[in-house]
Image (cartoon, rainbow, N blue to C red):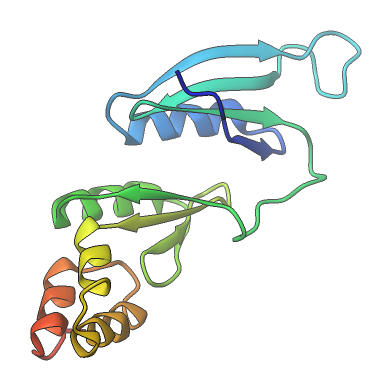
Length: 161
């Protein structure tokens, strides 16, 4: 059982965001929604908290108002096994959001995600520091990560733009 649950602070979009996120990831669902009552800081019936699961990982969303905006200091890193997985997740999460760099993006709510293939860690950890350095340089030049480009850099081939 998961004992630590990240909580994402939204202005008023917690329920909408949770519904969007569960539509993006397999094995995902809304678990529970609590709502503000009469006389609370948000209109009665507005979601207070939304507990949800993304691919088996539980999170919580809170409608807390505009006091605390998202920053890049916190992101969710998503393991994407194939280029097709990277492309699908990237396309969905950048709908209304924006690409950043090195596999990072901001979704339509301003929350940061990293879409990362496991091969990246393997290539960067290679004891041959020259190969690993080429991979790092290739990654730094990418917005959405490209597995073929990372492998090409590792092998010393030119990386496509």
